[in-house]
Image (cartoon, rainbow, N blue to C red; front, top):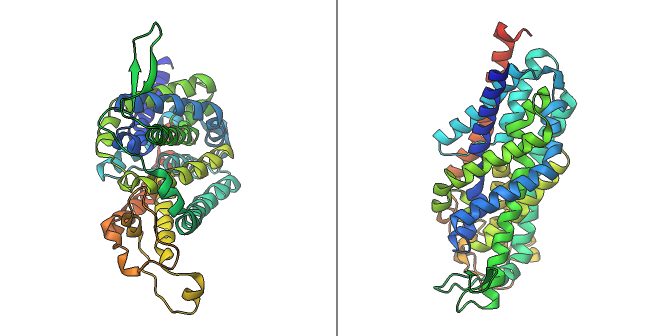
Length: 390
């Protein structure tokens, strides 16, 4: 039994390791890209705030995955390891295709496969979760759309972060106690803007912990083999290991669609998406950050593009709007945008300049297809392999 538990812990660490590798880039990519923080600093903050999110809000999601979808009594150690195997397998499949698979959706799918195979699934809980999977991206689209149309111009002027050749912050060791000070030539605007970027990264890391900590440990906690607090520490440690190692490549390439956006758009999308995911996590609802963020990007681009026409002109058909996510690429941070209705639609770039529809479709397809594989694989395994005795 001790050897089996050790295997379970190793698989949980593997899942957490991959979560750290895939989540650090989206959280701190903009800050690293703007030279606001180093990769090591990003890994440190990712580890800390992932742990805080998991320790506070993430417990609710652990309880949902560990006992609300199926009875916790189903989670024997063997079953827990198998469920974690399918979650880790989903991450692997997503990485093979270059798309980060949703660990939340894969975890729910694996557990749902177990519940269907044993006839002990809680369809009411599943209905609530799936409903929010549909509603949350719609909310992200419309919230971002309103921001893009009515508030994007103001945010764009505020976001500009003038960059000097020297580091924004330096460690002053001249005194008895080292302290962090602003670098030479750094003005207040640059310092404040840099802190905002880092703070948003920390917020996203917190959101990742709140939503994803359960994906690595919920089956083991549900089985009773691992207590909640040690399990969260294990998941946070494994995530930190991934942040310090495999995440370095994603940070270097800013390997997520959200970090390819202009800085203003990246900040808006990160804030909207992290807020929605955090609120859902507080309610015990596991959800996919990538799907929510993708719809937030589309909504923000749509809202920004509609600034070329007023509502009255649009209703009367006097002016056509070139609705394109590429509208987000039309602006420079700090630039004063034209008033609503004063911009020509021809000035809006094509969507392909910023946002490849084919790539977007592939992301959304795999975000749903990979969890479906996890669900089917878990169902067939628990239904037809006699070793589990169901």
